[in-house]
Length: 167
Image (cartoon, rainbow, N blue to C red):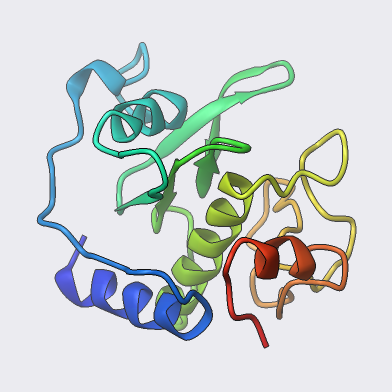
């Protein structure tokens, strides 16, 4: 992940989160997180790994350009853009599936979506908001990030209560 991408996400987070945001040096992805075919990293394994680096009261987000996956229904190795414990203190976002000129903006949207999960945002059985323009919307296997604009009126209060300064 280029340092400029990490800086962009951190700068955007500063605009909506009043807490202390620290960027750290890159850490290698553990080979133990690779799937059976050694083609993707298991996101659930990665967020457990990141959780070990995180103290109580802190959040951590890993940013990567690698292909990540999770089990989804009958698909044991579904490619995803991100994953976060809900609630929890760790999450991950990847640029691997992001297309178009505005990939950094999309990475930021995936990052705050996953950070939203760490704050307990899970509004339905699928853990996602039904509002089409809400940042907590389920990607449903597509890159629909250009359609997501902000957190909706149901998601926003949860994050404001957690100390986010969302406009």
